[in-house]
Length: 138
Image (cartoon, rainbow, N blue to C red; front, side, top):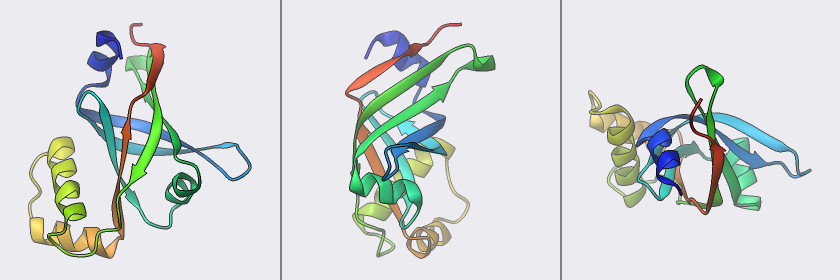
């Protein structure tokens, strides 16, 4: 990825996760992402369309819009999905805690957050960026 694309994405933000429906058409979902320079991470819910799509076909794209819609970046790769969160301190919940901290800072009640991740059947999407393109500067 070129330096200007990495600068444009930042370490976290809002984007559109694009997956493929069974018929090949795109399915788009607004998401909060975390980016470490190589890997995109997103919290997903088990049973939702994007999760089902990724289990069937792991190809994914993340679209990030620039200020005023005058620039954009698309990151592409193959998704890896974690197991569904099952225990308050399992590896998935620990990854979800790290994701939250990176995207939003400290949570006011981590015990409640951990319970919610299990109750909502959350899992982690991660994707190594293997292709990027766009128009990072207006």
